[in-house]
Image (cartoon, rainbow, N blue to C red; front, side, top):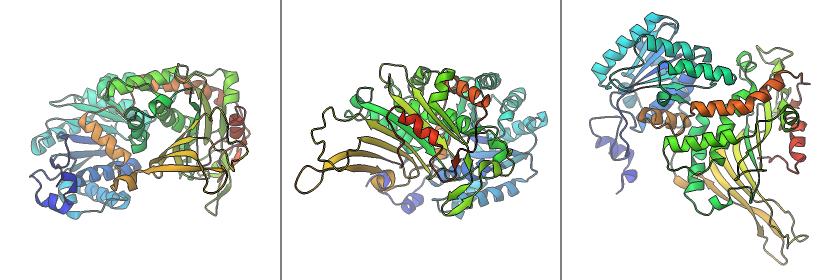
Length: 519
C-alpha cells in the first residue's frame, strides 16, 4: 500500500512524535521556524493566513515547533488572540473540518504582541519573544516575517526590524510582502531600497496569490512536460490570447481604499501581467526559482511600452454604475460608502499588449479585469488560427475557433475546444470540448494559493514569488497608461453592474476582428 492510500486515521495512529509532519506522505522536510505577522488583527490574517496555516498543520506540513507571533495595535493577551484565531479558522476554513484535538497543540504556538509599527520598543519586545520561542520551541532561529499592513508601513516595519537587530539571527530570516509593491515605478524602487537595507533581495518574497493557484502553476507543466503543445505555442499558430479576471462583487465596504488604487493597478499590474508572463515565457533552463523568474522577467521586459496615441486606442477604462446582479439591484461605484460622488477611479480595465520577441510578434494579448461584471471567472483563453483551407465551408452549423481555456477560478481546470462531425448524413460540424477538472481528475482537494505560497516561503522556494526586476518591468508598461488615464476626465459610469463591461472594450477587439469570450 502506498503512503497516499493510507487512511488519515491510520496515519494519525502511527504518526511520529512530531504531530505536524508525516514523512510517509511528504518528501520535503519543512524546517522549524516562527512566523511573525504584522497586522495580525486584520482581515487577511483572519480570512487567509490562519486558515492556510491551520490546513498545513492539518495536513502535517508544519514542524512541531512552528510558532506564530501576531502583531497589531489592539491590546490582546495570548489567550484572547488564540480565541480570535480559532473563531477565524472555524469561520473561514471552507473545506477543512475543524479538529479540536489538532487545534490545541497548534494554538499553543500562537503568541501576540500589541504595539505600533513606528514604536522602537515593539521590536525590542519582539526580539525577546523570538529568543524565548527559539529556546522553548526549538525553531533554530528561523523566522518568516509577514507584512499584512497598510503598504505605507512596509518600509517602517523592515527598518524597525533592522534597527533592533531582528532582521538577522541564528537561522534564516525572510520577509513576505503583500501587494501593492508601490503605486508607480518610482515608489516601487523606493520601497525596494528600504527593504534591501535590512533584507537582501534573495530574502524578500513578494507574494502574488494568483501565482499560487494550481492552474497558473500548471501552465508550466502543461507547456514544458507535454511535447505536443510547445510547438504550437507561438505566433504561427496562436491568433490571440485573452486573460480575464472578472468579479461580481463590488468594493465590499473598501471604497475609500479602492478609489486610491483602481483595477489597472490592483489587478492588471499586480496579477494579470504576471499570469501573462507565466503563459508566454520561454522555456527555462530548469525548474528552479532563478531560472523560471529570469524567463518571466525577460517576457515582461519584452512587452511593448505604449505611446499616448496607442493608449487611447488599445486601452479602455471603466467604472460600474447601478445595475442588477443575481436578481438584486446594486449601487454604482460612486454610490458606495466612502467613494467620491465624482470619482474617476477605474473599476474595469481592458488592455491590448504586444510582446516584441520572435515567438509572439504581432499576437495581441487582451487583458481585462473588472468589478460588478456578469460572472465571477478568471481564465486564460488561447485562440488558435483557423485551418488554412475551409474544405467544409457551407456544410457546418457553426464554425468555431479552436480554443485552449485554462480556468483559474472558480473551477480550476483546462478545456480544449475543437470541431467534430455531428452524427448522421453529411458533414455537419459542431464544437466539442475535452475537459480536465482538478477536483474530478485527482479526486483530492487542491491546496489554496496561500497554503502553497506560505509553505514555499518556509521552505525557501521563491519560484512563485515576484522579484524586484519583475515589479519594475510591469510598472514600466503600466505606468504610462496610468498617467494618461489620470490626466483624462472620463464620462463615468460607462457600464452597468451585471454587464461584461463598457462597449468600448468590445470595440477595441472588433478593430482587429476579434471579440471577447463570454465564459
